[in-house]
Image 1 (cartoon, helix red, strand yellow):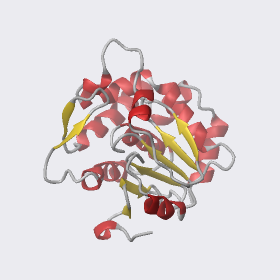
Image 2 (cartoon, helix red, strand yellow; image 1 turned 180 degrees about the vertical axis):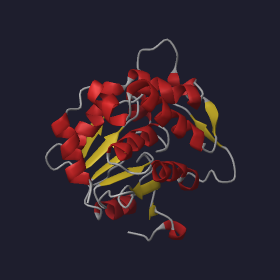
Image 3 (cartoon, helix red, strand yellow; image 1 turned 135 degrees about the horizontal axis):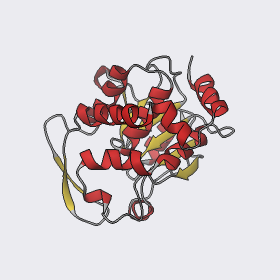
Image 4 (cartoon, helix red, strand yellow; image 1 turned 90 degrees about the vertical axis):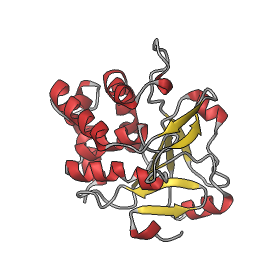
Length: 234
């Protein structure tokens, strides 16, 4: 596998953007949980490089239509593929067209069971190491990883710093870039702003009493929380 990009935590793998290990944040163990953009452009060489991480599970947070239009390419990589759509599938509005400051609280308000299901998937036998991703590995992936890291006791400033690293991982440091959404509409991807995640974490604290209480409300039990902490922390 290639070295880190420019000395940052980002990992350079052919055809896979925005990849990094959550290990090293707080007391999180290295080599167990990764995040990235989708695997739709992963090359055969990239798959061989990715295999060196020992991945066993790839958790895809995208909608079913996105999976059809831009399927993950795993080549000969032997992994279990799991899909947990993290946007509402039957609401009155298309969440892909909403501003992010509406999408983030919408996910918290409506997708608690899906968020818990993702964390439970990490606890299944031989699930780790695992890779979490959505389309570009920033927003849906950012929310899941922020809640996971908060549950693991990672300081908020480190959670935000990891979130902001997506601007480098997606080459957005110099401004917006065009992309085509799930409906074929050309849109602009803007650099992510820290306030989106700080506001989300504040919302979880104010309305639910914190991440642990929020996840408990949606079914994650004490044994599972202890298991996640014992498995993923040093």
